[in-house]
Length: 77
Image (tube, rainbow, N blue to C red; front, side, top):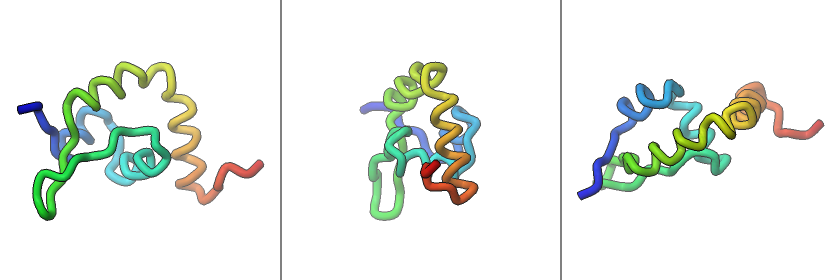
């Protein structure tokens, strides 16, 4: 069985807020969780490790996009 991480562990590991994680998922910039029950989801540890390995390469653009969404800007210049 592959190790799974629930949201509190993902927040601690990534230092991102819950809302930032879900906004990045919506942008396709963060791994999506997998369903582990009727009302429960978790992330595959290997997906998060891969994302974290790529993070230094993509961090500025991810946070720029996330900030734009949080501020209500849709990317139009």
